[in-house]
Amino acid sequence: MFAKYMAVFLYHNIMKIISLLCCLLVFVSSAKAQDITDALRFGREDLLGTARFTGMGGAFSSLGGDMSALKLNPAGSSVFLTNHVSGTLNLGVRNNDVSFTNGFTEDNDSTFDLNQAGVVMVYTANNEDAVLSKYAFGISYEQVANFDDTFLARGDSNESIDQFFLNSANGIPLDFLSPLPGESIADLYNFLGETQGVNAQNALLGYQSFVFDAVDPDDFNNTEYISNVNADTFRNDYFIREDGYNGKFLFNGSIELKKRFYFGLNLNAHYFEYDRFTSYSESNNNPNSDINSVRFENRLRTRANAFSFNLGTIAKLTNQLRAALSYQSPTWYIVTDETSQAIRTNSNEFGSSFVDPNVINIFPDYNFRTPHKWVAGLSYVFGKSGLLSVDYSIQDFSNSEFRTNSPDFDMVNQTVNQNLTQVTSLNVGGEYVFKNLKFRGGYFLQDSPYENNELQSSLEGFSLGLGYTIFNTNVDLSYSRASLTRNDFLYDTGLSNLANIDANITNVFLTVAIGF
Image 1 (cartoon, rainbow, N blue to C red):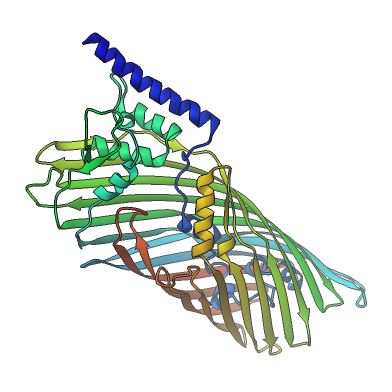
Image 2 (cartoon, rainbow, N blue to C red; image 1 turned 60 degrees about the horizontal axis):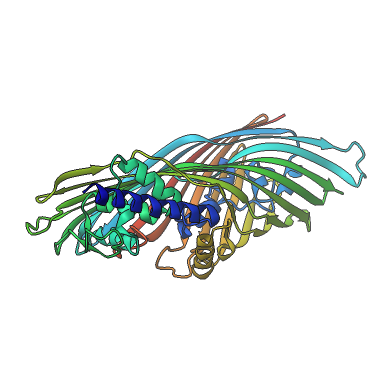
């Protein structure tokens, strides 16, 4: 008996030591499984900024003279006539109507924060005939994207999450799913994360919570598994809560030549913060099923720093007509991910089981590069009575790229290249001036970044704005509303049902700007 125990003990350890040595020689799939949604999240840009900017639908690349216009075209800082400082508060509300199989839910999420703050210093030449007629420097904080969101997908289906765990366990020896005497679940979970990757960790959770069992439980080399879930209909609940933002600091410089041509440069420092909690629950009332309910929770924490730059120019073709062209470089991110997981099951056969390794997976840093972007703009200024402006931009999301030595990222990049596409955006805005009041309106349309538009529709919206000027102070208020439709997979494997989400995004902006 003792000899048998020692043989089993040595077998376990030898197999795990071999796997660890292989991990030291070749980087295996220990990174979090990145996907297309991660690529789009890093490249996402919402319609955020000053109330004047958002009130005109973001159509500002050829106008300048606004702090948020600088993120489109850095040449716009030299359009200011005097030094300028502004700050913006934003109230955002996101409403999601979710259809999932035969169920419907509605969720709302709101945020209130400082959306923008910045200052520009303008220097004008004393000589009216000077070639360099003006130059300006500025620094600004801009929120690029707001990730706060919540939704619940609920309905009945014939699919169980057992397939997710079975797919994760496919090809993994039973030896890796069974702790040694004296080895805790947390120890084994941590070991698998370091040597075998996320799929092995998912398999461990499924096996230890009795979602599935080994076909041959006495064979440590067993790689075939069978589900303990035996039912035809399931009640599914999938809850997701997202928090975070993408913000950047702009360091701007620009010049005006002969009062007609403007050139500018931005150097941008980005900070990215994203947290996601997901909880999937399912239940069945089949008395013949060994497992009657499952609750699977996942947490993700992503932090990133990045650098980018902008180049831009504006030309006054006439006193009324202006044209612009600007280039936004790729944004180069350095990203850190942390995850944690837990699972709870209940059954008539096994009772209640709760597996929480209480382990935070800290993955190696990786790099990500967004695609570059071109923006062209045209505007017409009706003297002091108002203006019209239009912007058109192009960005190819299929050129997004995860950069690391892991071959798994090569597969993700291939998926990104095949499934994402070029995105064009149209922004139109206008302003009418009546005494000290300014009335604004805008429209914006952005293509879906997916080759398959059924996964996500175009983003379309409108905006309204009102401004009041007293002495050298402007107080601006704007309202914007946008909508899109998405079809989200709950998991990348095992569950094929989609959650259909009609999202409506409403924002209210209040800006105080002072010229001095």
